[in-house]
Image (cartoon, rainbow, N blue to C red; front, side, top):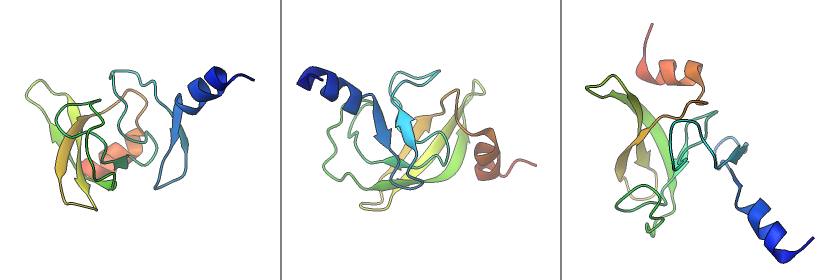
Length: 107
């Protein structure tokens, strides 16, 4: 196996720091997957815009709530356990609906 093949495979997934799931980077409904679809935890990688990977912190980001935008789209609210930064991130089409509903406290 060539170095290029190994590098491509290594960068097509990431391992969730919280639940240890191997997560594909491709996500339905978003261009930049930034959280685990199973437990919704994330990692503080982006600083200014999604996908910039400019954050120096790299702490674990806990899902703390749901934001429902004016157009009805749901987004996960994350707070970094390292620096307390709060970010709002679009949900992906394969996010765990049960976990999303529990986080939103929807009956």
